[in-house]
Each structure stands twice: as C-alpha cells, then as structure tokens.
Image 1 (cartoon, one colour):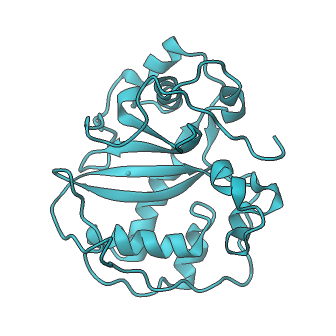
Image 2 (tube, rainbow, N blue to C red; image 1 turned 135 degrees about the vertical axis):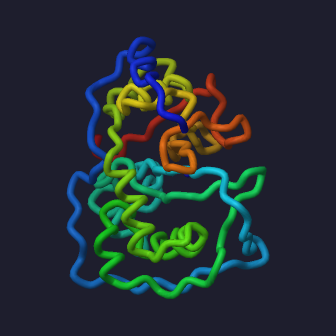
Length: 242
C-alpha cells in the first residue's frame, strides 16, 4: 500500500470495462455494540522497524474471497455474515514503504483505538481488530494520531472507483495485466503500472494495491513490489449469492 499520468485511458483502449462503481458496501450498518480490540505490537516475527519512508501502498482486499470460508465465523460476522457478499473491495490499509526492500512498521506503541474512531471507519475496514492492527503497524510510522491516519486512508479509498467485478469474473482469459488495466481505466490519473494484483495460491483475487509517492499521488510501482505476474490468470470469487 505513483506519479500522475495521462494513462487513465490506456486500459480502456485495451479492455472493454463495465461502468465503474464506488468502493462501498452493499449494506453497512455499524452495530450498536462493538467488540474491543486487543493491543497489537511487534514480536519476533514482526519486529519494530523505524526506518525512512520512500512511498506508500494503498491496499484493498476483495471481501468475497476473504469471506469465502468465513461466513460462519463469529469473529467475522460483521464482514462475512449475510451470505458473505455484503462488501466488495474493503480497505486493508495505507502502508508506508521503505526506500529499499524493508519497510517501516510498529514505529511506536499504540494505545487502544477510541470507539469513535472505530465506528467512523468500520464500513471501510470492517474489522475492529484489523483497524487496531493497521494503526499499530503502519499508522504509527506516519507521525499521525489515529484520527488523521484513518481520515487519510479512508479518504484515498473513498475516491477510488472499481469496474464491475461480476462481469470481469466471467471474462475469458482474465489475467493480472488485464485486471490492472481495468482498474486504471476506472481511475483517471493512473495506468496499469501503478496497480499490483495479489492472488491466492489457487489464483483467486485476494487484493489490489495502488502505489503512491511521498505526496500520496499514484506512481509507477517498483519492480520489486509483490504481486501476480502480468500474464498470470486471475479468478474472481463473486460470493455465494452472485
């Protein structure tokens, strides 16, 4: 989780893309009572790294795939209940990238998020614990209090548009390059080189990621950015009721 370019029409010329849609849930009503998150922090596998930032990644998860095996999970009821297709793309997070192969993380201890912050952002990131984790791991490295970090990340997410994923899921020969072109066509000022597609081991769409510069503007992703290779086939799970 990007320099401005006139490449937004590039994907349109190469791939017929359905009309773009907002990054919104089909139906999102925050429950009256929310669970409290647990403190999240570094450990032996995920150590503290307070190193310089070289850019950012905005990561969006494809919720139907996440919920595919979690429709009966009590911990995921808000996101994955009601058939598992309540949400489309959800905001995973805004991640500072490093200048080399490593990235900053867990730059300082994070207190529990205020409930007001959780409620304001739960329809974008529909997991109380994930909100806590994203601020602890990434937000603490952006020198921002929680309110400002989530205002920034949800603000970027809220401006994105997405192609009709149900139509794309039925398109023969869909690969990572074509999906990136479809995302670029839906978002003026980006081209396919600014998007990365993450898939599961079985080739199912997991996430899409937009590379950003230090000013939080889209830029070309580095060659080292993780993601599916351009010609890798991408399959899209639509959810149990689509």
